[in-house]
Image 1 (cartoon, each protein chain N blue to C red):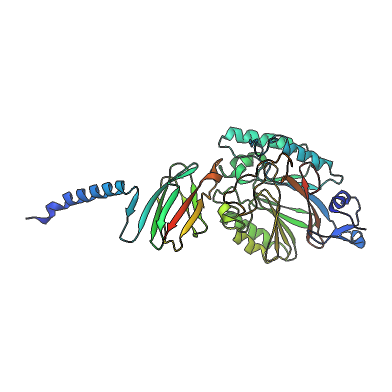
Image 2: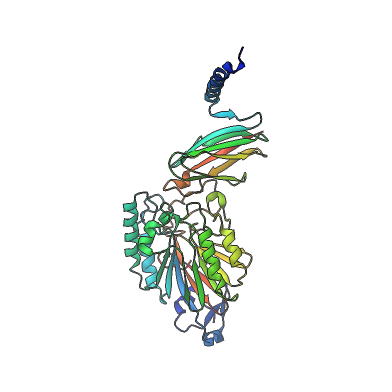
Length: 125
Length: 300
């Protein structure tokens, strides 16, 4: 038996399972056993999702994509920020070390609704 | 003889013998007038947001700036120059409309009696196109000028949408400062605060500390800015920072409410929180006396 003949079917099956699991976990993907990846899109003048729930002491990767122009993500009370560029995925890694609700906002001026482009990170115990 | 600031400002420039020791105090120093130094008086207006509409916030959006211009023109002693510290217009993504607003704004302020009028952008004027259209009207977003012994530096911390001054402009600032004596009288105008007043409300400049670092070796530096639509005073080291009221809508005090939103119009106190300021520069002492005025010229 040639082990190599199973490589392609296993690869296809892996990709299929990855897509299905990603779909049913609502955008939450386990990048590895410890990190939680959360995909966030930004566009004038909102984030989706705008409320992000994570767990204390569990490492998080925020994966940002802009659907239109340069935006920003700034959560001063957690000490994290990032530019969000159109056409590019930007990752921001952090580990929340305190529970509570922490507002974030766009800190790259993006137009008339810029002031209202906000959201909240909810850190659960 | 003690007089209030309004009287002081009326007298300033016509041989008054009143000099000041800084915001909040007035000293009668008769001899100072004889010293022959070139003290002078200028006016700062900010955040006029021409083009804004929102009756719940300002039902006189088209009249407020005009009233302020009339009030400045009515000052008994006219300022030697007027400085607008940004957000001349309210933001619009329509470039044609942005040009229209800037054009209308320029026409309105051309009614000022004083013709030495200087401008700088706010993020509403320049944040969406890196100052392209603003420059069509006002040539540049950052510059210096000297007036009667004071070196004025106009810093642009809005054309870069990341709320930054940027390395290029910081290098320009350093180069400009290298030409000055350490004892130079320096006044900086910015739109955003250079210090972290309230970063979660975007009331900061991301690389503002770099500008403050190069200014810090100079003992006589004062900064006037806008953006936060209210009077505010702060010190970083020996550097004073003074925010001016706006002329369209007030904003709440930093961190006083969960969400930053314009303060609603108070029909019982129309134009409350809106106004402009007069600044008397005592060049010899490198001190700046500030008097706040309401939109209609009433002393606050």
